[in-house]
Length: 152
Image (cartoon, rainbow, N blue to C red):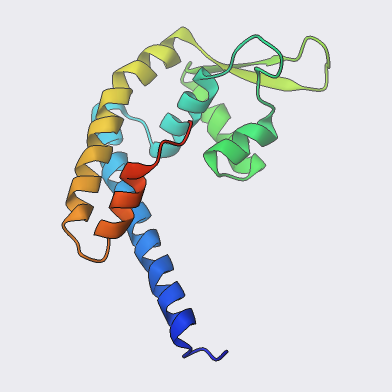
């Protein structure tokens, strides 16, 4: 295969379209969350992931799991947690069974902000997808996203 192979070119074009769709959606949601709730997309995602923790077996996420869920490095996730902790939206505590482990919980203030921001996030996502669906290159990807029933 060469760099001008039609299969590779089509694959690269598909990747570019997917990347463009992701970028447009994230930028649209970012603007809406920042304007109405002073939250970034990453902050919202982190609050959302951590709000789904529970007290049962395996219910609390370790920092590596959190980093994977919000698609950041562990160090970037730690910085993000620190920023939200400084705002009173998160709190950290030691794992009761393993003193080496540190868990993070969403505070009541964080849960309130998340619930206030959720409709903004959802509306901005819908708007971004509707706008992208009018672009012939992105419309097939939008249909795929809309057809997914993936668990959070």
